[in-house]
Figure 1: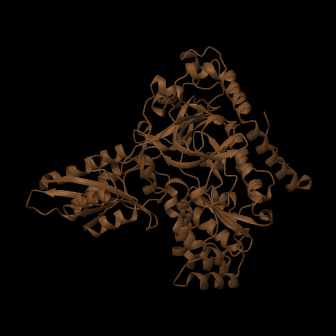
Figure 2: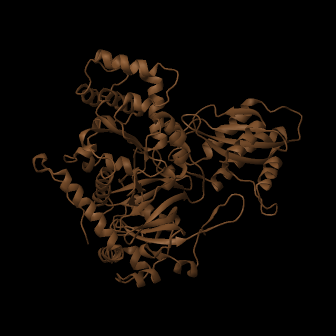
Figure 3: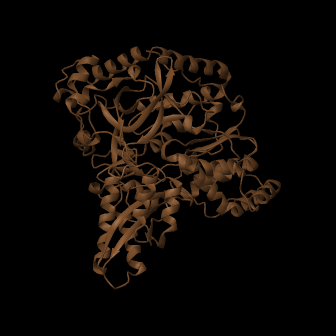
Length: 612
C-alpha cells in the first residue's frame, strides 16, 4: 500500500516543493485505490492479530478476508470491550486485544458510567497520527501560499494524566502526542515552526502555559501567519486571557522580564530566548488593548495572519460569531478529523465555509465501515441509532467506497491497536468524493445534548443529574414540573444553563442557598470530563439554574406547534439551541442561581483511587 513521504532530516537536503508534491501524490494514490487499500489494511490488522484472545473467542480462526470478518465479528460499543480494557488496565499483559503491547491508554472525551473511556493504543500509532498531521500543510499551501515564510501561533496544552493499577499511563490523545518524540524532537519543517517553545506547551500549570505562550506570540507578532488552537473554545479562551492580562504582558515586553507568577524554570529559560525589552511593541499592544472595542483584535495585533485554524464543526459551531468578531472575518479553517480511537481524515478544501466543511477519510488509517442512520421526524429532529444491533442491522454496514451521497452514517472502525468493528458514536453525512474516497460532513456526536468544550453530556446523564438535584426541593413541598437546558457560550468560559419550572405546593419560600445546592449537585452528578473542565482546565463556567414562571413550558409547546410540530408527537426538548426559544425562556425567568463552588474532581478513574 502507498506509504506517506518521509520528512527530510537535514535542512540542507530540504525541498519544500518536492515534499509537498509527494504528500499530495500520496493523497491522490490512496483515495484513487481506496477499496484496495482498505482491503489490505483489514488483512494486515487481522493477520498480525490472528492469535489474540478477542478474535479467537469470537471464532475468527485466522481468517483475514472481509466476508468472514463481517459475518463472524460483532459490531460493538465501548461497554462490550470495557471488560477487556479493564483487564489490561489492571496489569494483564497477555495479547487480549492486540498482538503488539498496549503502550498506554488514551482517555476519550466521551464517557461511560461518568468516567472517561480508555482507548488502548500501541507505539506505532504515534507514527500514524504524525502521518495525518504531515498531510495538513501541503494541502493548505495550495490555497494559501507562503506559509513557510512565517510562524504559527497555536495555543496547545497538555492535560493531567494518571496511571492505571497495572502501571500504564492514561491521558488524552493530544497530551500523548505533545509529550512524544514525534512532537518534541520533530525534524526541521517550516510548517511546524511555532511561536510557542515546547517548554511552554508542556508546562502542566495551565496559567503559566497560557501566559508564556501568549507572551511569545506577542513578541513575534509580525512573524505570525496563522493562529489557532484545537477547539474554537480554546482559542477564544486565549483571547479572553489576553483581555484580562494584557497590562502584565505589556510590562514584561517593555522591561524584557517575566512576571514573577511564572515560576517554572524551564518555561522562564525558553521564554527569555525570545523576550527582549521592546517599549515600542509594548506601547503598540497597550494602545490596541486599551480601546473600548476588541473587534478585529487578532488582525490588529497579528497583522499578517491569513486564517484561524480551529475546529468549528459540530457543537463548536456555536463559537463562529465570536471568532468572526475577534478576527474581522478571517477564514476559519478546520483541517482534520480525529478522535482518541483513531485519526480519520483531512479537509481537502480548507478555505470553505464552516458549514460546508467535509473531511476525506484517509484509507490507510484504519478499516472503516458505516452504519446507516435515520432521523426521527418531530420537533427535535433527533438521530435514531440503536444501542445494540440485531443480526439484520449488523448486515447493513457498508464499506468506505459503498456509501451513498447524502446518506447519514455512524462511523465504525477497526484499528491497528485492538478495536474491532467499534462504534465511534459520530454521525457523518456523505458530502462528495475525492476519487473513490468519500468526503463527510460531521453532523453530531450521537446522543450528546450539551457541550461547551471537550465535555459531552447526554440526555440520560442530564436526567440523572437533575433527578439528584430536585431532592433538595422536597422539604419545601416543591416538585419539578418540566426542565430543559442550554449551552450558553455568550460568557467565556461558557456554562450550562438549566431552566426549571416548579410546582410549589408548600408555603415556605425556598432560600437561594437551596437552589445553589441544586446547581452543585447537578455538577457533582455529571461526568469526569465536565468536572475536569470546571476544576482543572477552567474551560467551563459555574452551572446556572433559571427558575421560570408557571406555564412557560406550555408556551414552549405552543411555539413549537406554531412552527409545524405535531401536538401528538411533541416532547419537551431536553436541550434548546434555537435563539427564539432561548429568548422565550429567558423572558420568563424569575430568578437565577449559580453553583457556589467547583465540583470534586481527581485525575484517573474512581476505581483507581487517586494514584498518579
